[in-house]
Length: 79
Ligand SMILES: [Zn+2]
Image (cartoon, rainbow, N blue to C red; front, side, top):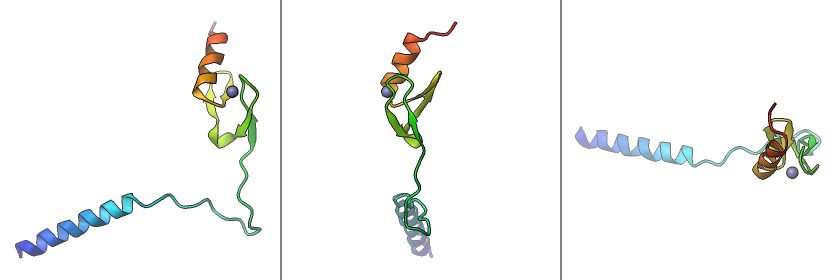
């Protein structure tokens, strides 16, 4: 009976480890076969266009990266 419990625990650990390693599901496919397009937005500092999902929101707009957000906030201090 003791071994049965150990086997059950090992199986549970393996199951948890496997389910947590599973890659994220792919984005939902549309009937026409095209992938869902994210709207393009411009970085408030350099004007670079990038998908809205990759943009960093910040004070004064969205930015292409942490460096540009910091530079913009430095150039436009509060007050
Ligand atoms: Zn930028």
